[in-house]
Amino acid sequence: MEQTEKSLHAAQTTRSQKAVQIERIRQMERCLDRASQAVMHLSAALDEYAASQDALRLLSDYYGSELWKQDFAADSAGLLPQDLKRDVLSEDAIWNLLEDNRELQERMQNME
Image 1: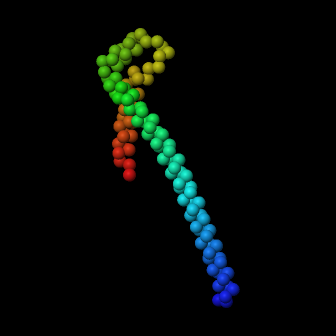
Image 2 (image 1 turned 90 degrees about the vertical axis):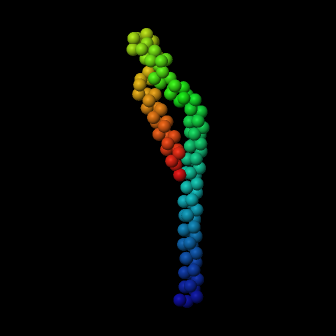
Image 3 (image 1 turned 45 degrees about the vertical axis):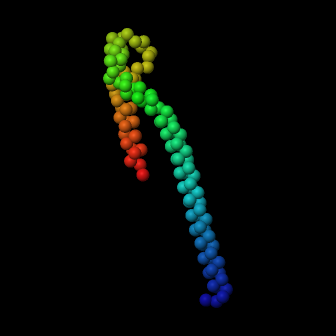
């Protein structure tokens, strides 16, 4: 190879390496942006989740208690207002939430 050809080949190789390097940096920037967003969202969700644990404990205590049974019976007898939201009186709503919560805690413990 002549000196000029060698110089052209070296310049092309350098340009090619630089293009690969630039693409790698762009890819890593996309990874950083995506992961940063995910971490921020998860952190906010975990704060909200932690704040809801008292409510979950109250629901767990209420579910199946004598108070829940009294409320359920009053609803069944038509003694409660028709426009009262009563999801807590369905046997499935609280159970499903408590089960989802248990599965979520298990999932968080097993993450790595």
